[in-house]
Length: 366
Image (tube, rainbow, N blue to C red; front, side, top):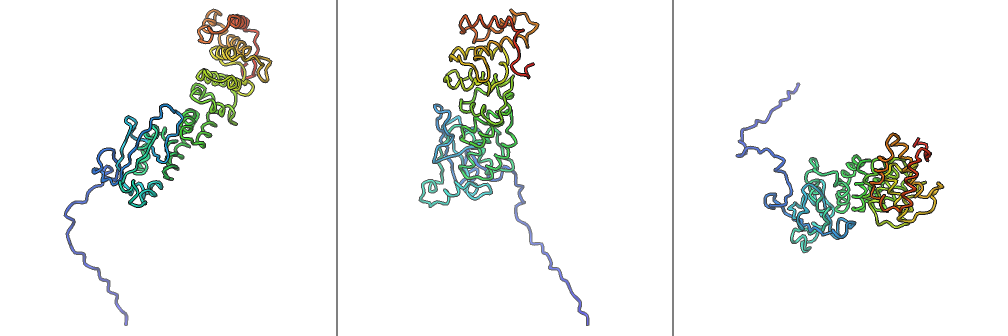
């Protein structure tokens, strides 16, 4: 005899609803940090930042051990201290937690910082300015507000505080942002943060694109400039290489003679004649100031000879139809013309008067 399967559905009763309507969760109601009211954000941890005065040591590391910190959003360098009201769960257990704070918060309650629920961190001004950006990442990764100028610092902080996702995110953004137009800025930031990887990459980009960087090259230190000129990506370019070296020497009037000798190694770092009469006068002045009387490598010319011939070549190439008096008036307006000895001025004048006799040094100058 066949059996009949009977399916019954349990009756759903009307048992009423919660007395209050379901709220709409807005972004500003999510867990967030504050610099003002701990109660407003239900904070259970405090971070006190002491901003160190580094005015006398521009090359000082951004963070003083054993404490560290940084990130950006709202600048806080106007005062010597800043306080952030935060949450243990975000610092030590969130999706973007810090292993630094995780270890600290799991310490015994007898630990002073745990007992007081307060971290005290000493930062240099640049690091303090970036600190809010680190907090923004930990709290609001999907809407992370940060400046590209913070990327190197954020890598530093991510390493120090143990925030792997932030390191990876900052690195990804930096890979996309580093280019020929900002390479020098990245070199300077990387040097301040002792980030050797970024410094090496930015140096490579700068060296391979000297035509974009010759105006700002004076911001570098001698060692950084040396790294640019000796980089495997550096290629001397007639119009820009001499400009880069001249601009650097002008920006660093206290260079040692050996440093100037290195920079003016024409065969290695420059090419052809100096690119305009202003740079010609700069190198002529350097040759006199540092008594650079030896022939340049690969040339039967001293730096003084090359500078004078360069000025004459520029007269021939760039000002062929201009009256000589008009051209030489421009030459004399250079701040490096007046300090020259009288005999050198005469030699310069005579060379420019016979400029049609000057032959190019490099095929690209023809």
